[in-house]
Length: 283
Length: 258
Image 1 (cartoon, rainbow over the protein chains, first blue to last red):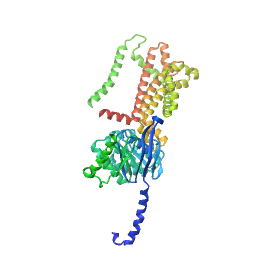
Image 2: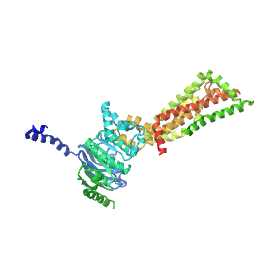
Image 3: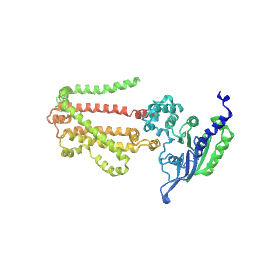
Image 4: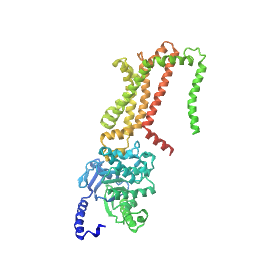
């Protein structure tokens, strides 16, 4: 309604000002992996799991890492999450090198049944990582209810994880990560142990989280369809030792939709391209 | 639902029937080792309700709980430390397995020579007996904690105190409780045994004295009392366990139903 009153000069002066901070934040990647290497043991007997891995993720991106099984994806995630020290290269968040698990990061594990605390109800599971942040009661409440609403578990606060289905347990694990308010959400094959229908729902939940919370999401999967469906970019990894084969830009039109997006010709092309990359690697 | 009720009635009725049988069969008994149950019950109420209740029953129970709590708590704490510090564990484990192999009752003479015949001796003995089962269970429980739970702790940067009290302790809870249950049984045995050796107070001492003075009814009354106490203590323990481990028992029940 005020557009009629504003003249063209005010518009032209405000626009560069509002764009400037945006362009500076995009120049430093949110997550940057440079020459990452990881090996176990030393000398001739050393097992080189990760060779020389370089890629970066901008803020707000969804990136999937795909590769054949046994390629060292889980090792890579554990290095990224600061659980294992790397033996070479570095990992930076917003330009700062990490040592140990960074506060800006949350991880959703593949096996939900072993990552939730069975002795805590859903609400207490969400609160556990927040205790040491010493939040005010109102903020704690707000974070937990927002997270539970986001994953569609608003009524399940007082249930125990083992009273819920597998898909719902993984939702609790995602809600726990959301309540932690990380900048980067890392997921290790998060939908591998749920049924196909739940998997579609959780994939869409993942995209919704990116929209609603502006999180940067890095997801490891061996499911190429899932990678194409979710990603802005796919990092295809080859094995022995793990290294980047190719970074594939996924320019599918958004918002994505399980039936329509998967029916697009571009979807099939990207799928074929990624699959053949990984097939070549396995052969 | 109906069949469950029947089972409960059966569970209550069958010991009552057994008691009734004992009562009627023993009523005419002249065997001095097996006096009539009616006579045992009379002695039971004369002796324990409530003449010796304070001087003996409460003393025994106090020793039992003090020893059990000291031994159990030490077992949990030291079990934690040994499970978390591999070097210490390698140093101590063979010794622990040697000492736990010695029947706890066999240690009573040593403790008597060290600290005499008082209550301290009995509590020390009970604690020593209670210590090992809980120690070993706690060690196993903590070492068996899933690596992914530890990863969760690291990723979410839990403080060391949070890890221990809010993750490791509950995760090892089921095993710690089975250790404590064994500890409680052993404590009970050692409580009686320690009273039977050179003590003038306690249920064990009274029962042994009755036997040595050919007062069979008094002896049987003591044995009955021990049975009742053991039964009640176990019910109490189970009640605490089902409260603390409700999550574990609940998930197991659900697992079985699935």
